[in-house]
Length: 391
Image (cartoon, rainbow, N blue to C red; front, side, top):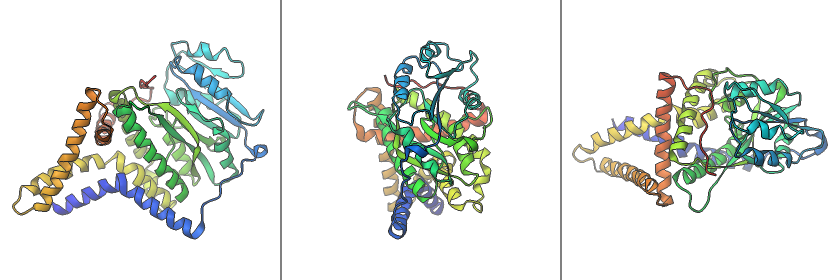
């Protein structure tokens, strides 16, 4: 039992902290011998033609701001096209977009899900690069330039931008926890990219070479992740570009954030089942190592190991003379008490940020368990589940 407990705790630690530490050390060593990889030049004359695709579903509150933000983006004249697809929207979103002649609008009354809308939009794309972004996120002015400059490197097949969560001083657990999570994720993506490749892109802001785009199955939940990883599986790199960022508000509350996390977890299991070839390390050993370390462990066994390690720790602590086990159990109990206090404070709208991290950590791992159950029991739908965001 001690061996199993030790292995379980090691995997949990490696998943959430150890992999990041390992990446950081490897990158430091790599820089010492080879230096930093030079960034491509921002030569506006050689930037590829680009289409910005925004899939929007009932976003009338945000859509005017999104249009304004999109029209202000810097890119060489004549090389950028704006395409909004609003399939299934039943509010004023399509009507608002139709007021702008410089934007190509695709609208169908039927709601088939985001990936169906994206596939339909791609039929109208004839540019070298495609950038995808969400309707409720806002890009910095040079985002497209920062992203598309990387396509001067023939080994680059996709580019992931940075997601930033807007947090105010009175942030609740959903905002503070989500913000901390994405800051850590951004650091991991930066190091992943420097080592070899980012392991998937997030839909808030990512880009692909048009020639490498491969339609994914219509029931795909994490379409952004699958589209980018299918390109990586062909031997192309996904680059992380932190100077291109999409800013959005946090989920309205922890319940809304949990809804999103459960959907992501269900999609994660689906993606793992459909990307089985990445478990073979021989074609691309570094990518397989990054994929398993950064994604697979989080989306599969780690939440179960948290439960197993607690149960084993309790059993071992009850045995005579197991002082170390009792100390370890005390540490686990204290951590979960902090998470419980975070839940209580959240319900009472008391802002003690130090409690948000253990609470959010537990919410994340619960979401993985719930997502796995949802996927294998009811099959997660690919149709949008709109999460309410802070206004």
